[in-house]
Length: 511
Ligand code: MSP
Image 1 (tube, protein in one colour):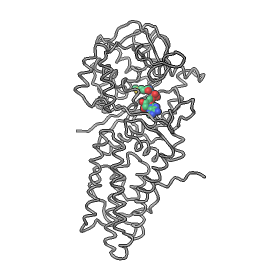
Image 2 (image 1 turned 90 degrees about the vertical axis):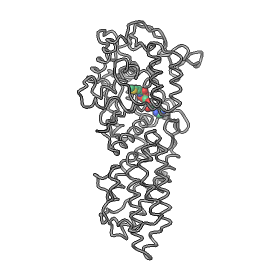
Image 3 (image 1 turned 30 degrees about the vertical axis):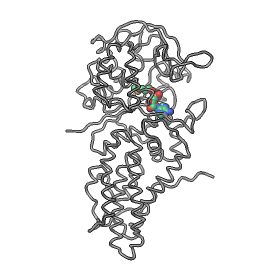
Image 4 (image 1 turned 45 degrees about the vertical axis):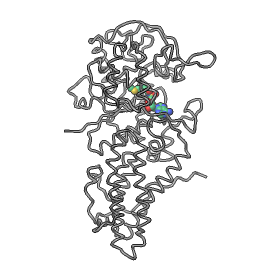
């Protein structure tokens, strides 16, 4: 049976340019998508843009453009960012596409047919920046006696006719669902937050707006557009072919993982499964909410002018070091701080020194003293050989465990234990000295190192696809033998190796 894996990023609002926060979710999802492909899964990796709603309409007006031309422009920018971050997404969905309008209309009609929607009037607070409704009790004091959303966003009082989703009727069923699926929303801190929110009682949710036009019209009542979050969340089933259950992509539903930032956990872990179950569809299997980045200790904001465009980082540091840093620096789920100093230190110590030098030293000895071909495996391996080889061989299984928990930094730490063990091995075995005293042993040591490097480069390739592809080229691993299953088959001795080249140069601060 085919093993399928469906993973998504949030679809990003097109009200402004992509920044490092967006790149973060996309890279994390990409690592998992690539890892699952390596493990033999048929993967569907989705990202895209969220283009309707008041916030985007406002941004378009400020840019002096009609919303469609504006969203066309910004969506292209997000698509470009995903490609430059190395994202291997299988689809890029835009909520202004006809396929999506159709899927949303069908979803809406199903909810109507099942008695889950009624017409009423919404009166309450709305934050355009969050595209969210807030209860009086949720507001926090702002400057000069004003009140703000808990996120700090300004709120306005809204009173308009509105369609409602009977969320209140789902309270017990949602609590039962969370009890049956203890890992549905992770990390645990987010689960606890969500459970206490649901336990305090759910009100019906306003799911249409009648005071502006930029959205998907409500079927049968074009005076309303659908609430942007209902529209946005539905992207995950649109891309899977909904409502055409004969579409081959429908086999991917329910999604295995929605990766989101912590601020939108509630939408994904409460509203979305409730909408789906109410429409008679299966809820996603898991939602993981990661933390937020600050930049050099400060919150990223347009007014502070410290918003990082991921493309500037790439130009300066290269793609793979940035991908590595973002997933290594902070345990996934926690908040973290982006600092140039910390990035440069990790580049120079962990990438250039620990891993880069290990590869360079091993490969240049092979190039010089083994006729640039892969030596044979040791005929009688020593304890030191066996210890290192078996520790490295255990990596794929250990990493699978860590990555299933989205413990990226832990996974990288496991890999670096082997990198350090291999450095200790090369120092201790001193193949450069064996060249004179025991050339067959020198060849055996270098072969052990080449095999360990092959494992390391293979399991690291989801994190750093470009540089690990170069390392695997230098190790003589054919492109068809770069997945986890291929690791069980040793490369033939005598495989010619290309001249070694440094994979991770040291980063020198410009004077
Ligand atoms: N459009 C909604 C999501 C709809 S999904 C059905 C949205 N878009 S967004 O453009 O605001 O992007 C939100 C995502 O960007 C967050 O979930 C998070 O992944 C990421 N981040 C934005 N700023 C961030 C940081 N400062 N740090 C880390 N990630 C953050 O919400």
